[in-house]
Length: 439
Image (cartoon, rainbow, N blue to C red):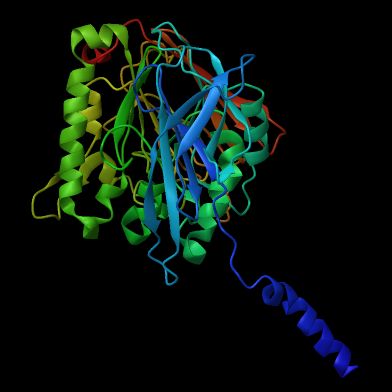
């Protein structure tokens, strides 16, 4: 009997003995799109584990396959885990795309090509009514909403995905193999529509290196903060984590604040606000929430909202800044729940009216959508929320948003627990935008 066990042990090692030379990892994987902020363009990002060329072959749907070729480059990313695993992150920017035209593409090199995917170039018209899926806190383990999001994306229900922080749980784990697996999982979404991101607390290890290297957002800040325009909206993504990981540099907090101020000033120039009247922000940790998890906004003294007073220079919070520049809608995650707030500023409700709170609201509208699904499950709510809490759900799910036109934005919450049922919805209606709209 012992000889049988020995034989089985040797057989189990046979692949290693026969195929002792490691594979050549030139096959592209983890393909995802992002919008670089320039009309008529799209960025393709993917990973290989050996150095190869970076090419995208593409063509119009219904035309000749792969009749156009674009080239880019790759950067070596060395994970900071014990194994110091190496991977090559490839980026290619497609330009001169026809608005709203559908393209078929694959990416890689003559040493290996990806599957064939398609995408629709974003319409650069200000009358475009883009449709978004919005969520945060999606992990490899227990990614409950993932299958529904994959199917709906492939059905063409979304133009853009907004992932509001916290990926994979966590990308750096197992020497970044968890990050690889997560990027493979979302490929069936992110290879078809731009996957726009912001960092969360679960990206903090090794100074957010997995996040900064894997994603390709607009601007020159390694995807930590940026803005872009789509339809009648100016969309701002920023890092709430600069308020919490001061060991990576307090100057980042001030640098981001100054950038936000300058960006909001530019967006509020009369000629710009007339064309893109909606200003929508996305950041991971909310200014307000009513989860019972002892996190900082549970104690109603949120650093993101009010700033920091225990630093060498007092660090300004963001609520006053966003209010002063007339931010309309603020999207958050972090809390593993869904919560819609009444229009709120300074911890007080400022509804448009008793019967129509979101028609000409007198303060920004906050949505928390962090229940896409992860190993930490959903959170519990405080049984006695403040008066600004309008609707709450602990169901797994995600948010849909459509910027319909210059005066109407529609938001709804999908429950994956209830097989895709819409459990909450609102119209935010504004006849005017900017600071003067609050009065």
